[in-house]
Image 1 (cartoon, rainbow over the protein chains, first blue to last red):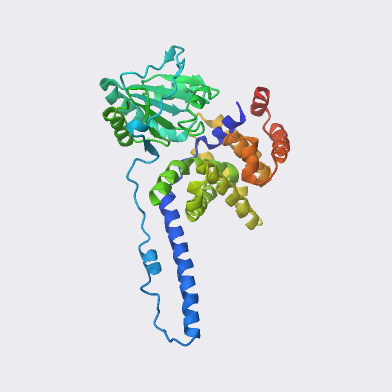
Image 2 (cartoon, rainbow over the protein chains, first blue to last red; image 1 turned 180 degrees about the horizontal axis):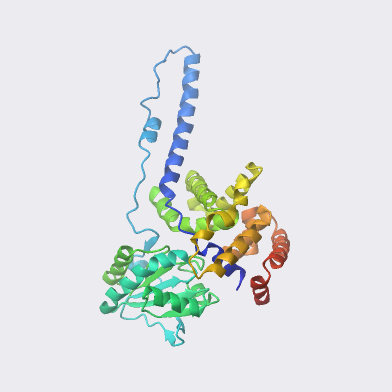
Length: 232
Length: 170
């Protein structure tokens, strides 16, 4: 067990933090508005100082005040954490080859079909939340010729096999105890980003990445994107 | 700008949260730290998005927020309650040994002063290089090396068996 794994153990059962983005936006907008109205107040004080009497709150219709009341939270239009690559801007996916959890040699052949590569570990709490959706998505896309393969990183085989059995995950995963495989993908996804998903199009190029836990709907959207847009 | 920030923040907040948790050892404070970090990133987003490595910039912001908040809080009785207080009851049955190990790790981490602790978290959890760690903490590479080596000795003493295996793998 290395120190990274020890740290992973320490955060393994930590539930995901609730989305902090809306709150961050609100706080930021409030502070920006306060800074602006502070400046306006100072400017007004100066104006009053030179003799123009503007006692009615002069900045009540100022945009800065509107910012406060309009402190809203824009909703993202793409699935959380997903990146789509235009067909003409895709880079080749590294070849993936190794040994599955059950000990069978495995190599990817990307040509002619879409491949979904899932980076996971049985120690990773968000992966567990993901797992039922992933298992279900696989059963639907398997028939459409989409290949799924996992990279079980920084894990031990026993725990990983138990995990697959528990969640009914039927696609193969490659052993990656020392991160060698995820590091092959470091240009595409950071090795510390678990779970993450790489979707490779039928020409072996990366069509999309998802660097967070996925729902079936997100995954469906991204796989459909790869199925419907082929690179040259 | 909102969209870029949005997608970056959504993508990154869970990872930041885990790092924050290792830094401060408390889930609620970790959440606050993530929030403060995102607010700070928003404030300097124009600068941040041009940063060569947005990820490193976010980590730097998180660690500096953590260290500056530590400075403000003179005594934190609250984090004394750390591992024992919050999370143990969540442990899945059959994962008792893992839960115990987790508490052990968090306590060992907490026994380190904030800066050396941040160094270890950056080096071995975020897998940053000595150089990157030095940049984030604004110190020399030699300082990172010597400090980390001292901290590792300390963890080795505190953690015993699980750590010896790690040490052997070095």
